[in-house]
Image 1 (cartoon, rainbow, N blue to C red):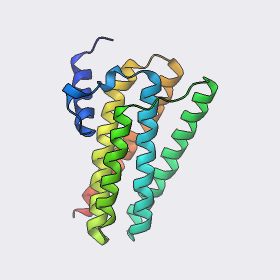
Image 2 (cartoon, helix red, strand yellow; image 1 turned 180 degrees about the horizontal axis):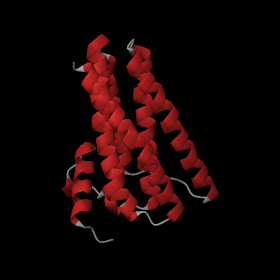
Image 3 (cartoon, rainbow, N blue to C red; image 1 turned 90 degrees about the vertical axis):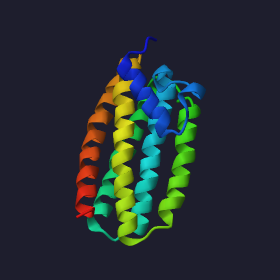
Image 4 (cartoon, helix red, strand yellow; image 1 turned 45 degrees about the horizontal axis):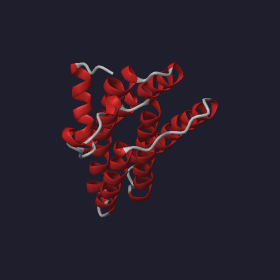
Amino acid sequence: MTLRTPLLAAASFALMLAGQSAAHAQSPAELNDLEMAHVAYVADTIDIRYAHLALALSDNPDVRAFAQTMIRDHTAVNEQALALLEKLEAQPQDNGLSQKLNTDAAALIDEMSALRGEAFDRRYAENELAYHKAVNRLVEEAFIPNIENGEVRTLFEAGLEIFKVHQDHAAAMVEALNR
């Protein structure tokens, strides 16, 4: 595949998100459809884990409502993805990016687990905003333009629209918590 400048920027950004250097990892734009599907599934699952942590630790009604939305929406998208993979008789393919996302998420969950009250709420909200910005950019600029299967692309496009709303909601939550 040829990589245009925006794709290179998104790939570098995604590698930075995943804590990998561009010299030592495959570009996200070079992943095949099944590897991209796995990264997206992992990213959704990570956000569900963050949301469960928020429900366990936060007393803030807005944070809790946001977390419930994350669980509902990310679970629904993952279920749609699994149904499409079953229809296509395909399996997602694990890869270095999805593995690194899981490793980094575990460290962040440990960090956030030590926080309480407003400190937790602010850290959770800030992470949700940064996480949605990064993943949305990766999906929009590196994955969607390179997905070969039309049904997979349609699923990613629909998910991206939902997750852009999440990003806006997270931005409003960060602003409210920092007042």
